[in-house]
Image 1 (cartoon, rainbow, N blue to C red):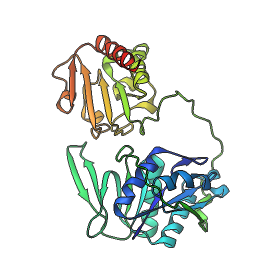
Image 2: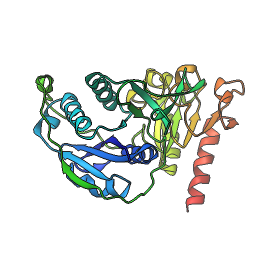
Image 3: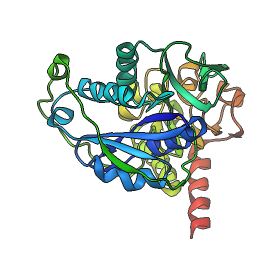
Image 4: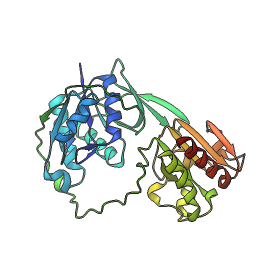
Length: 320
């Protein structure tokens, strides 16, 4: 059976959820071969094997930590040359898309970004994407070279599928460009205890209707009751009520959770572009004519300052 390369997103051997989702999709079109780079690469093998990786190509080198992106592209190119895969799958993060784009140029292949599904086709893998702010769904395939495809988080379930997960060393020769951009310092991101916004299964977002930074506490309370991430519209971010890193939308982050709750968000096209692929959308807004109600699965017309705390209390009661 043909092999599919899966780029492993991990931190010191701890594999992040989007990679496990990629293994589920990879099994639809071939046998997953994981590519793990950097410190803790070999430690990923057990989890990757449990989720379908037939083998893990692992390599550690100081270049992966000391320099940006290009060493990882060099390694993926080496993996492509060693395996001759039918596709390369990469998580659709900011770094992942840069790695994928550079790899596609290197190997002379086409690229598909932000796929939300993947299936086998007679002439190669077929990817599903949402286009024009999710107004259309497209199916496409790469017609030249080895398809390089980035996939949005939460596009597939994480499924256990025990496989060998045998570790094999990957030989990499770094290019002259690999040391072109050096990392001078790192500052650990302060943890909120909540899931990463782009990977969360549930996202609770607040917008202009929250009417102040201090009022985001009720959005956070609902999010914490659900084990969710907190998002914000551009209006809320521009007003200084919440950090830009939490902005959902065309100029912020794209999310695709199982459940998206929009509170006090009108639903401008720029915001919709970042969340329309959510599986279930709930909106809370006192304006019954708000555009957000055109795309929701469930809508609540009401004052968020009354509805959200009641919802939080109900969630906590049921959990208790």
